[in-house]
Image 1 (tube, rainbow, N blue to C red):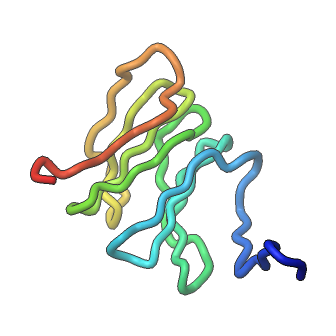
Image 2 (tube, rainbow, N blue to C red):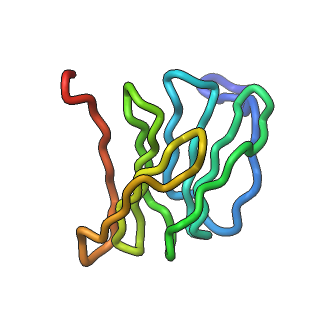
Length: 113
């Protein structure tokens, strides 16, 4: 390898189409991904495999965020809907179409930070 080149450590596969968003958990060995195929997946980075999938979006998922203190995942995408799901149970806690266009960014933060 030449100077400045990096070698891939792992390649995770399992999407049809493009992956549009990624976020990594601070408290677990999980990475979450969302893509054009409407899927949100939870990857265990120690086992290098999908351990959970989250459903509900009607179009591509473009953005994801994890809350810093509680185990919830926020997602948004081309269906103009923001969704909040419990990380462990996959249960959707809240969803609302707050926009008329694609949701390109979501943010989760503690009230006390």
